[in-house]
Length: 290
Image (cartoon, rainbow, N blue to C red; front, side):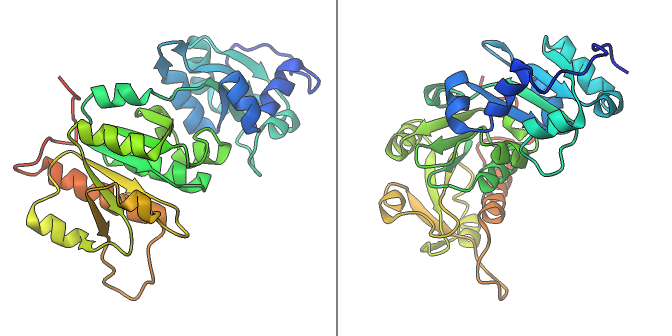
């Protein structure tokens, strides 16, 4: 077992109460702290750093989880996090999941100023313009990470990045790439366009077909995909701000694709075009801006 104290932290501890409150958005915003649950998220949090230092500041672990994930608990201690052994009930009280995995971390906010993202001259960006479902937001973030995107932008009309469901759905990707939050839609579009990025709205009713765009060779340049609400898509005023509205073709009998699936298709289409001959870069193994 890793070298943590032998006594279990009490359910009446102020540390437990403070962690439990982070399940609510207003407390997260006030403290600028959020919860990361499960071994994958905690491992990534322990390895992550910001300008303020280590992202992971506190870890609650059941004795069984501390033994099973000794390397993660050791990484948390190496990162300077306070590690508490806690009963399964205490961890369950802090956790927002139905079946906790025995590890819950308390992390500092890690969003990146939008201006810093623009200064890095991004080549592939996912903009969540009106995404209200936290599970969708986290899954799109995971897709963006997998596709090699440079950043994700959540507008002020989208869900809280630090909603526990969004954090879980990102499966650690939240800690892998810059994410800006609370950016007005108009500012997001204007800023990216001024940075030389083409804005494409993903919409099932789009007048351009993704396959056609790929065949025409128009997808190789810096691109930002703008995604909307799964139920009603993007408002007309948001579509009008972009350079083109593109639909993912449906070749079978499915009525539509869900948001995360459509985002994966769009982001990977851009990633492939960008690393092809004549594209703006190689996404895989991209060393970033010079």
